[in-house]
Each structure stands twice: as C-alpha cells, then as structure tokens.
Length: 296
Image 1 (cartoon, rainbow, N blue to C red):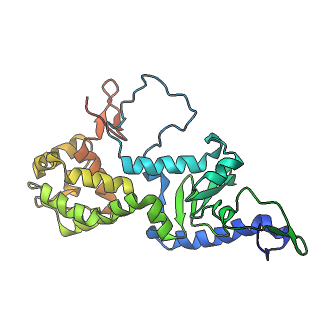
Image 2 (cartoon, helix red, strand yellow):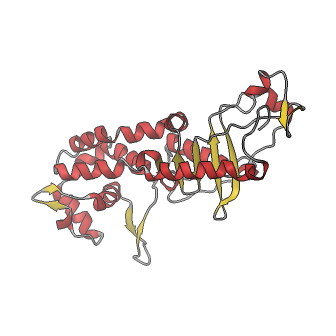
C-alpha cells in the first residue's frame, strides 16, 4: 500500500484483500435479512451513458411512474457492476474531485459474473494531505505521488444477485430510501387494514403480509401503493372470491368466514390479484402475469 508499510507479503497481496472480504461477506449474509437484500427485487435500471436510446420504444408492462427511490438504487448497482460503460477519468480530474465512495470490481470474480467491493472512502483525500511519499521495498524508499490510494476494507459486496452489507451505516447512506421503505412496512400494513373497509383480515394475515413485505423492497412498495389506493375500498369477500376463481385459485384458501385469512406463501398472490396483474392472452387464453402495468 502506498504511503505505509504493508505487512502483507508481496506474494499474498493480490489475494489478501478479496479473501478477507469474502469471509466477512459470508458472515454478513448468514446473519439474516438485515445484512442483505436481493438485487432482483429492484426495477430495471435506466440505460447507461453511451447506450443509444431507442426512439419511440414502448412496452406493455412499463410502469408510467417507476419508483424513483428503487430506480435510483438499481441505477447505482448497474454503474458499479458495469465499469466498462463508464467514462475514464484523467489523473488531474482525480485530484480536483471529491469522491465519497469508490468500488473495486472484479468483472468475472463471481463465477464469471462481476463482483464489486464498495468502500466509503475518498481515494484522493490523502493526496491533499500528504507531503511525502514512500514505498516499501525491503526498506522505506522515496517515491512519486500516486494517482489515488485504496482503503484496506470494504463496506459492501455487490454481485448481480445480492448485496452483502459489512457496514450498515454505509448501506444506509447509499440505500437509505430502501431502508426507510422496509421500516415503514408495519405502518403500511395498518393502513392497508384500514383501507380494506369491506374486507377484514385476520391478525395472522396481517403478520404474514408484514413478514413478506418486510424482506422485499419491491413488495414493500406495492404494499404502500395498495394501502393508499382508493381501489382497496372496492375489495370485499364476494369480489375477491370471484376474482380468485376467475384466475384458477381456490377462494376458500384465501377467504374464510368472510375474512382474509392467508399465510406468507399467499401474500404475493394477493398483491397480484388486487392490483390486477393477472390476465389472459386474448387469442390463446394463456394465463399471464404483468411484471408492471400502465394505464391505457
């Protein structure tokens, strides 16, 4: 490491950093849902810089107003995992910049897929503070100033499938909106119960909805939207039974004694049905599910 005596032998320096992070990341992932979230729960990120936009392209399942909080998080992950799509920075731009975070990316480090180690550390900060530079080569020797320096730790490990959190404060600074969204799930469950004025639910159903939506940001957002939708007032036991039957479900597994009575495995189905995401193809009658929807 430039500017300090590095205790790691030369032959081990190339592997010491990823090995140290990998062990810590594994512990973080095993600690439970507070230490990771699934990348697949985020919406598709916007196109990277340099990719030509397709004029006039539209999609039947495109949301008219993609959630800005989740889309912003998805865009960040896309940038981190595709460094080749970013513009290069010259050394003089580095010295003039103010970088809150940096990422070291192995583009084929996760079974052929990229893995990024993100640190909340300004790699140019030391350049503005140090006046002398040394490298260790059996002894400290004077050397030229580096273009940047790297921290010895990582705060997040990002793959195409999940994010392992090694430092919760750093995660909150980068993804505070997602953390707030998940923290609001209990209050949104209360709001949903109030919004379903004609469809009471059991306490077990409310607990199941809170459990599932508390793990997945995408479902947490859908819960929030449903709780605030005027359409929730139109849902009653008879309407829900009819809709479930129409889509090949067994209403008796969802509505019992006039109440919504579901477990965790049925939460996503309930959200799909109440949002109208299930439909049949006009010409083939094939049952389909819309990943997102837009008003015609």
